Image (tube, rainbow, N blue to C red):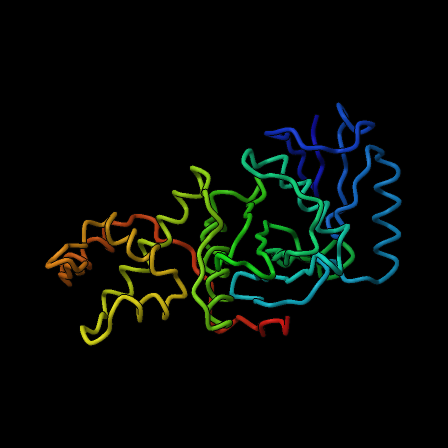
Length: 279
């Protein structure tokens, strides 16, 4: 019927395969372990025990971004190490994503939890979950993002494009070019088109004619096909003698950038503190 997460009571948008005994009940989630129960008494007991343990009040794993000027951080969580947490995160996400195929086999994935710093009533530091994205550890198709969710109570704050930008920041650290897993949902298409449009136009604003699109793709961490599709969407691709050429007019680029009423929220590259895993 509903879930209680932090101080928020949220109505699910879609069905998720929680155990049958939890159907048609309100479920209470722990902010930090993502364990859930239909009992108010049990969740209060769990929270008090967790607080008393002195364990960090944040997602498990290591910080790989932040905190930035807005107090936002990103945490990398290995599905093989924190299996229960990641399975519960996927269950939670399924309540708000219609296209997500739930897979309890979380070991092949890494999960990236976006949080915001807050101070608890006892003065302790806490990290509030804002959303997350996941990616395969090894993707044959060079996908750098498998699933993404902004928690409903934190939507319309630009966090979706922030997580998209962070996924590319990690891709750049790997020295690779990436793309989101296909097919994209309708909302995903809008978010990525907005992000790609801004980043490609910004890159073209100072474009050096001595560089080709592969250089632009490499600099941005974007797959070349996504750069080309964005330029086609912007009507900036022309075919000449069997070749695709970019029709570049700096005034038009500046005008297109200026027409974007709400630029995407981007990460602060100086706050990325991540080294690609050895595997």
